Each structure stands twice: as C-alpha cells, then as structure tokens.
Length: 286
Ligand SMILES: Nc1ncnc2c1ncn2[C@@H]1O[C@H](COP(=O)(O)OP(=O)(O)OP(=O)(O)O)[C@@H](O)[C@H]1O
Ligand SMILES: [Mg+2]
Image 1 (cartoon, rainbow, N blue to C red):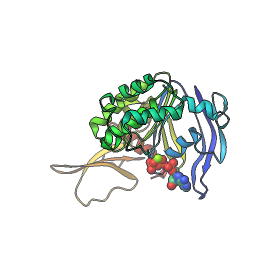
Image 2: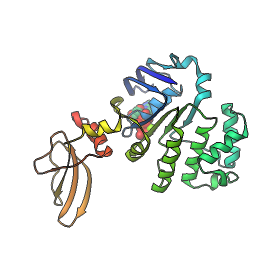
Image 3: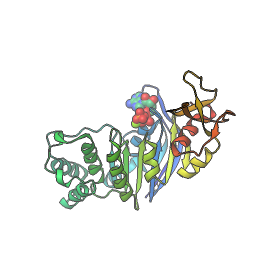
Image 4: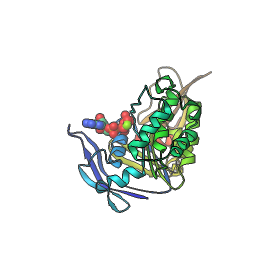
C-alpha cells in the first residue's frame, strides 16, 4: 500500500488553517509516529486520511488513485481509532466488536476472536463496556481498529490516560501489528514513538517540521541540550527552553534545549523528547 499526500491545505469553515501545504508519502511496511503539541494538526491529518474531511487544496492518492474516489476500498483496508471514541456502554465487549465488524463488512467470528486475543481482552469478552477500566476501554478501541486485519491502521492518541504499565502493553500490541502495514500513531508521549516507530513526523502549526528516523532527529539535537544547577528564582536564560527541573541537594537541576547553549550549561546527550522539543523550539517557534 502507498499513500501520497500531495500539497494538502486544510482550512476549516471557521477560517482556521489547520494544515498548510503538506506533502508526505507513506508506504508499507511503515510505523509512523506523529508528534506535535495540542492544535498542531495531527487529528486533522488523520481525518483527511480516512476521507472524513475533504481538503481545501491538494490531493491524497491511495495506491496512485484519488482517495476520495475509492472510499469503499479504503474502508475495507482501514482500521481507525479516533481521538474521542464513544463506546456503547450497555453492550458487552463481544457484542460491540460484532457490531463494529458488521459496520465494516468484516465477516467471521475468527476476526473478533483474533482482535480480542491480540488486545488481551478474551477474558473480558462478556463484560459490559460500562464495567471496564479506562485502559480496557482503550483496548476495546484498538481491538475494533484491528478487526479484519486492515492494511492501514490509524490511531489517534491511543495511549492517552493510560498508566505506564498499560502503555507498555499497548506498545507490544503496536509492534506486533506493524508487519506489512502502514500504521500511523499520533501522540504527545514521545516514549511511545521511541519504542515502536521507525519514522517520526513532527507537526507544529499545520506544518511538518521533521520527517525521518527518530535517530536522525536525535542527532540533529546534539550540542543543543544541556543541564545546569540553578537556584530557586533564577531566571531562565533567553533563548532556552526548560525541558525538566529536578530538585537536587545543591539547587535545581535544569535540563534545557537551545539553539546556542549558555556557557554555564553542560552539554547532555539528547533523548528523543529533547530532540522533539528542540525541533519545535528552534527557529523561534516556541
Ligand atoms: N472542526 C473544526 N473547526 C474549526 N477548527 C478546528 C476544527 N477542528 C480542529 N480545528 C482547529 O485546527 C487546528 C488543528 O487541530 P487538530 O485537532 O488537528 O490538532 P491536534 O494536533 O490533533 O491537537 P490535539 O493534540 O489537541 O489533539 C487547531 O487550531 C484546532 O483548533
Ligand atoms: Mg488531536
């Protein structure tokens, strides 16, 4: 499968420009993490890809043909977890998946059993959705996205609100499902991307600031990440963005990203999180 997003601009009826001249290609197999702060345009991009929105300008091609002319083919190949996902509280997990399978035209119990198995929900299949924990409900959302073994899986913030243990379980599910597919995952949680994605897009203000491997993003931030000990009330140096602050015995250890580190800062090895923040911060973007 191949998706070409060609020079897409999305302006909502309110006049808000959510994406601006975006050009990007996805090809299977690919596990792509989309990172960006609130309002960056991640959900908008995903909605365009599922033909849930029509772009103001530009075109999306699915295997070389316009996406909007092949909605049926798209639907047959798509698994989508929206950011806000209403579940039918009174249904059991199995009933809900059976219902979603019917909507998607996926036939056969085996697909439901498989989705339950992959999301470790087999034991809960007879439990009503209203009686599930937040993490289990998220897993039901993932399970419905996996129904019928789709070739394009789009997950909009699947790990939001999950505890660390539950997030690790999710990452395992994600890494198992990437083979021969295109998986797009949007998140604020950089660790999720680091664990499973071989490609990362950084979106900010409707623009793609970075598209490439996580390791190159990290190497771009080399010498732009530093630490120093500050005292309470010390101002942050101009041009620096604080990534974290930790209280230590002799003050506060600050971790910063900056185009030019202040002389008193000690250079630190960048993490993907530092690199993401540096990418957004550079060129005065934040
Ligand atoms: N239906 C809409 N009508 C008008 N503006 C919208 C609509 N949906 C989104 N926007 C605006 O478009 C921009 C991009 O929104 P989008 O939901 O794509 O961001 P996001 O990256 O998914 O953010 P978040 O991390 O908060 O989910 C924001 O400024 C948002 O306010
Ligand atoms: Mg969103």
